[in-house]
Image 1 (tube, chains in turn red, yellow):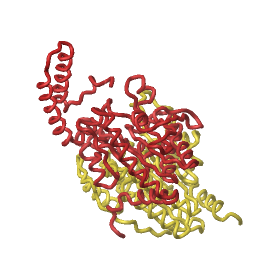
Image 2 (image 1 turned 135 degrees about the vertical axis):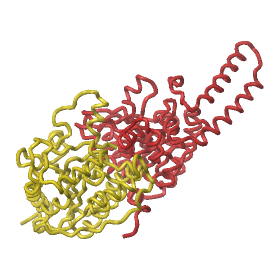
Image 3 (image 1 turned 60 degrees about the vertical axis):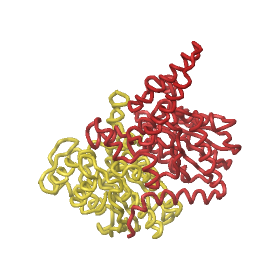
Image 4 (image 1 turned 180 degrees about the vertical axis):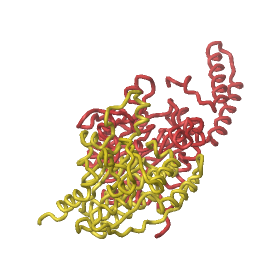
Length: 324
Length: 283
């Protein structure tokens, strides 16, 4: 949790003050054998109340900030917490290994699976290594070849989505970012194994849906999933980066809104105060929900899974279509 | 999503579209020569001085591709307008109304059926003049309809794109149209019929990163801007000037993404030849 000091959220000012005071009293108690237990208990009750009231009514912009919090569990944390015997597989077998999108094989609750997701990194070095979770065409081609492997050995696919978007760069364009994303979506649709995608932080546009065209789409309670970043939307439609909060509201990018629109299937509850306050509890919640969906999907044949996935996406938006 | 600059200036777009119909002259955006509108239309909106391919109305496109300029428009399903109740500096519903009035179309996509050198073909075309050809539910629904209609009537499918990408004003409902159109194309391909993608200026964002890039054959009109991210976004990210011809059709062909870069004047002949090769396998 390297950046906690720099990553404080503006709306958490009161919360962090109380947290700091508790920490301070605990340290004093430890060092001087003084007893602050009653004061600490009082502060902890206050903290819980504050966290509850703040997190039960986060605005879309506050959720965006929480979804991007650097201390939030990332794909690597979910893999470490959920997957045993994880064996990382590298490269797209064509050009390069893209560390922005990591993946491999392993076991989830005993079941062999293919797992992959965008990894943002947690400090400067790892962020550079993982290119801030912004994959290039080789990342999306790695995703496709991992899906080939899943189909060949009949392994369910779990993806974790956490990206601000596909990398916008000359090299990415040269190597066909658009084609790589398009064919990755197509590859997802053709899978004959269960596929479950979980948006754990930021679901950024085409770079997200490239690995989220799944049988089930789950979303963390404070995660966001959007057609464009609020910043991009504000600068294009409002022509002013200051309008980012308005853009965030207008885009309806929260898990709660997307559940209403039928874009996602289930919301995974976060601990009070957000996933960044309790990784273990978050990952455990995710495990329960993913396992339940996986068990349901395992009862279908490969052809049925492919058909259901296609139908799911063919229907999206259709309830907003009037009959001809 | 990525949006090319023109899309964010719907008002300017509107005036320029008007200029074409009201005024006698259009200035070539490439060489700056003044082109007489009647001549320009006859030349399929190709600059007679530099050969630059200007954007052209969907109707002209259909007329130049189908035999004897004859075709029938397919009715596309109506969708609920503005599901998000989206408002930026202007309400989305008002923008929609404005574009509907000026374009005489419900949304950016038109689908037509007709013959190309006697091969019955379904063509869908995006109108860049309608909110930057952006893809929302209506376009997704229309592409699905085109795929379904073509498959059911055993006609090859041609989709002609001109789009800034997904339509932001419909939020995630527009992003998922990437998956939906891909699913529709996927289902169409299972019919064994050819899907030809023709990318015109510009084809970017969620449209290039879904059905446009998935043609059995990918064709691009010469000089078109085609890519995923907008050039400005890339410039801001890498803080370098972009290479010459970056994201031009020829650049994409040279990097392996496009099969054929084509002059608009040869499009009908090329399409007819390709469709015949893929369908009428012996002659």
